Image 1 (spheres, one colour):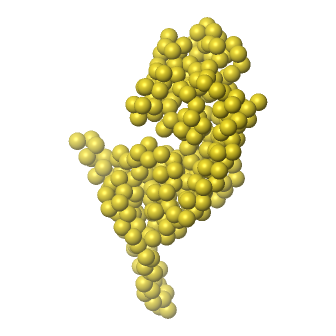
Image 2 (cartoon, rainbow, N blue to C red; image 1 turned 120 degrees about the horizontal axis):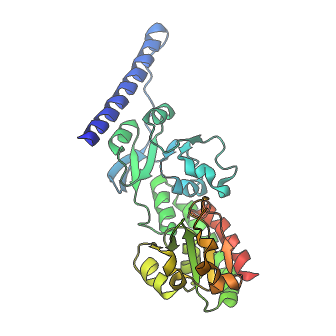
Image 3 (tube, rainbow, N blue to C red; image 1 turned 45 degrees about the horizontal axis):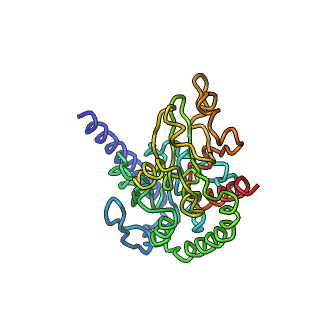
Length: 317
């Protein structure tokens, strides 16, 4: 009942705000005897098959409000700069200078802010609890995170926005960079295993090939080996990650470890200060490399380009 009341309240708020905006516009026209009604230009539209159904959207959207920050770099690569995006995108070091002039939507929950921006397309994640309210503001497309790999996702966004050629161009350039870098990586690493680990205060996440953190590059593009248990539980499972306790660390730790804390607060019982961590062969042989926890959260073309440079530097020196 509380959820229904909350949704009803949100819906009424949107209707009220829209009514005020309309009334203000009508009042301005009435006060100006020279003003004449001018029909708004109708943009071409397409029907796009989204996770939330077939949605009629602009063929060439101009004002995209992005409630799913992981796709920000995708749109930039396709030549489309969203007018607004949720907060985490502004913390990505690989977007430095690329968010100038873009509105910070915070956690994306402010309907009033979206109304003021008057977007012609809203992009969000599946599971949005305010989808009905968002659809009253602008056509809204929901994307299921992780359903497509990053190349497929770029192509799909290209289909959505009529920029397929730009998607194909990036993929061709990316494949060329991988082809050039891969031989030296394989020569250096050989059959040694690689793990991607993010510690919590107690326990940690181990990542596979489909949940950011550079896993797509390490396992799919370079074809480097994961420890058997990581391969089984975080890659072959399709889940993309595995949460483990500190005691399980030796089983999941590879000969190389890429790592960053899940949060900056690891005071107290820190994984990095534990005896188990310090005894790992990768730690003792200086094969542990720390990545930026925000920059590696993203798996878009811009972030992954920077991640590729990072891996080349660390794995070939």
